[in-house]
Length: 87
Image 1 (tube, rainbow, N blue to C red):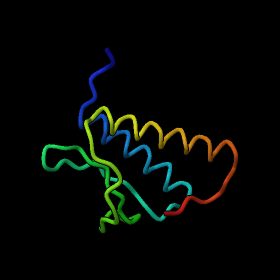
Image 2: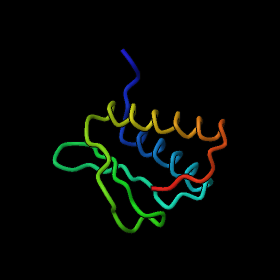
Image 3: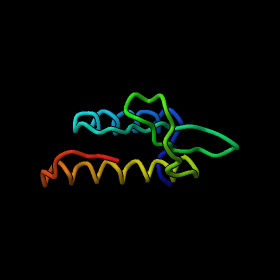
Image 4: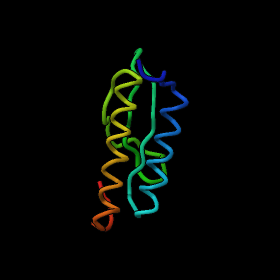
């Protein structure tokens, strides 16, 4: 069985995604939220002050896998030099 994923782990992964997005001049950021017994990933403006959309809700493991996929996509964008990332 895999390692236990905590809310703190998800927040750290999300912060890492946000750092990398900001480095590529993205106009969006992401926040991990908990509501109605679910964990959610929300898209915000770059300043983190206005929620734009719900991205995904699920278990901590599901959000962890989603954030891992986002990191993989960022790795690919950097490897292939696709430029700026926008919403």
